[in-house]
Amino acid sequence: MLSTTLITFIQRAVCQGIPLLYGSTGEILTEKSGNLNLGIPGIMYVGSISGVIGAFMYEQSLPTRDAINPILAILIPLLSSILGSVLMGLIYCFLTVTLRANQNVTGLAITTFGVGFGNFFGGSLIKLTGSDVPSVALTNTSSFFRKALPFAETTGAFGKIFLSYGFLAYMAIIIAVLCAIFLKRTRGGLHLRAVGENPATADAAGINVNRSKYLATCIGSAIAGLGGLYYVMDYTSGVWSNDGFGDRGWLAIALVIFAIWKPDMAVPGSILFGGLYIIYLYIPGLALRTQELIKMLPYIVTIIVLIISSMRSKKENLGPGSLGLSYFREER
Image (cartoon, rainbow, N blue to C red; front, side, top):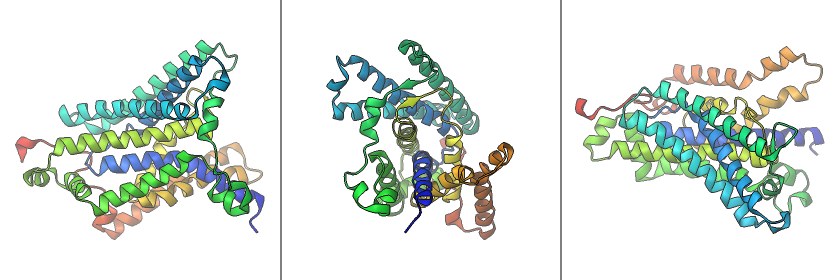
């Protein structure tokens, strides 16, 4: 029998890893088109606050708390999050694909803008509520996101480890698997990988390079934004506080390298990263400085994987050939 502590650790590792899985899956899809989007942390932040705004407006429109509709309570934040994230992806694409701006600089600017955007509107919502604490609580809406499968409590340790999460956790795994199948086994995935490897050759073969980049980046942004929504509506039980997302966006980007650009590999990788991120809580007697060093473990593991994959020099373990490079058709 698994001990209660181990079961709790696995559950928390999964909950920590789900936002990373959403972010890394979205970024992998984006990078397969050749776009290096370092704006993922900002996009996840915008996806988070957009869902919060949608849920807040919906709850404020209700005459009583009991009048809440479960379907609308889920759909409104979900669609709001996707809309906000896609708009951020469109901004990134317009700057890097249409205007051919530097992708690294644009991504960092998107992250800075996204965090500022989230903090501004988050602070505005806090003022509207007149709360004494610097946070917004959306517990009514959150309860529908956090509902576990009905038979989770009756199946012992198995149910607690595998069945005790909200629907967004399972959706993250499904999306990652579907993205892996799309990239490996479909014509559209082949075209997208061709664009990422050599856009000039793909263009010559009749593939619309710009459209592929726009679609991959916007869909990838929508997926990443759901990671922010999960963090607020599930992990923090509907409580928004400015700058509460931490460095999870950057961990998601690190997970892309750890998963060697394979969405299905990001599933176990996200749980590993989630576990490494919180393992200091389960080691007694650690000093504060030591705790901060242990939090670096996911990044250290990523560096090790990057070194090993580079030494092997296998093409399938490396990023797309044109990653981070703008495509100039006139130079073809």
